[in-house]
Length: 353
Ligand code: XIL
Image 1 (tube, rainbow, N blue to C red):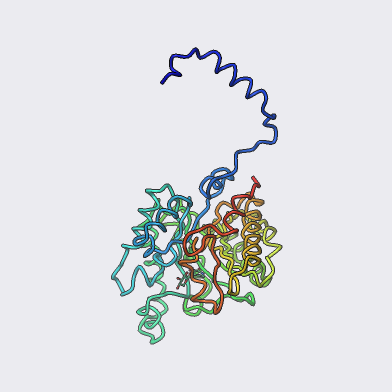
Image 2 (cartoon, rainbow, N blue to C red):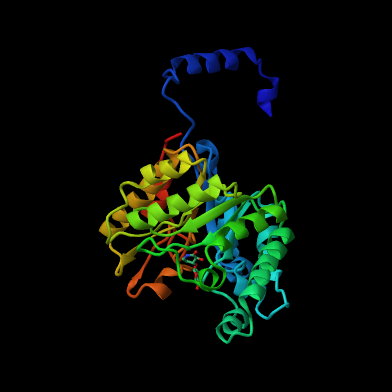
């Protein structure tokens, strides 16, 4: 309190002298970011994570970390068809609604994942198609209704939709899904048109894995996007899932691939990044992993059209990797206890924009 009575002149002179004595702020960019949210703001990009809805509900530390660190979220499973319509005509939106609501409260944008996929379809649909009780004509109507219903429900609340997911095979052919088999290749353009009609402001994406490096897959996806654009189909973005592993080389050409798609007028996003390793974890592997995360963010930031950098889960406590890749794991930025791994610190060190 004593300071209130002191003359303000002397402290002012001291402060001025101190400022003048400091080195010129010529190279001083913004101070290092304290967390991913700050990094996102400094670099002008969205930084996102897939969300495990059970953990969001039940684990306070998970929830706090997600809401604090990220500016974008994707439902890991809660918006997939089997989750939202497990029985024909019975919709279960509670989980997806909770995710969208939580995102809104925490100033996070949302990626809708996913409208048309060959996996995690409800049994009533796959079985009906298999036994012929759902005819191709009916199937088309079912797909149109699914897309329209879901996109409309979240109109204005979803920044970007993964409209079609994984529609190209490794050899560059179109995937032999029930969609291609029963509706023909036109289902892709239809899906984008229906989604656009339901929410004209949402960015509509094609999303896939291994298009970071696999040439046949890249070429087919490239021609597909080019043709869709040429036909006036409302497609706006290309999502690179980015499921990487340190036992494979980092996809060194990734930024160039992003630039090629950007050249078609596409927005770019890394939508599902994780970097797995063969267990056990060692300090060397964690260092290599950190390098992969750092390069992925650097690649995205080097492409102006790359607007979103999303990881497929932020903690090893909840990661799809151990369940899907035998003997592999530890793919996320934070460990099981939510302690930051070298990869997390590596991201905070990236300066590009
Ligand atoms: C995965 C989820 O992470 C798992 O929980 C689920 O059992 C299977 O699907 N590509 C995608 C994601 O587009 O939807 C997948 O998510 C991972 C691969």
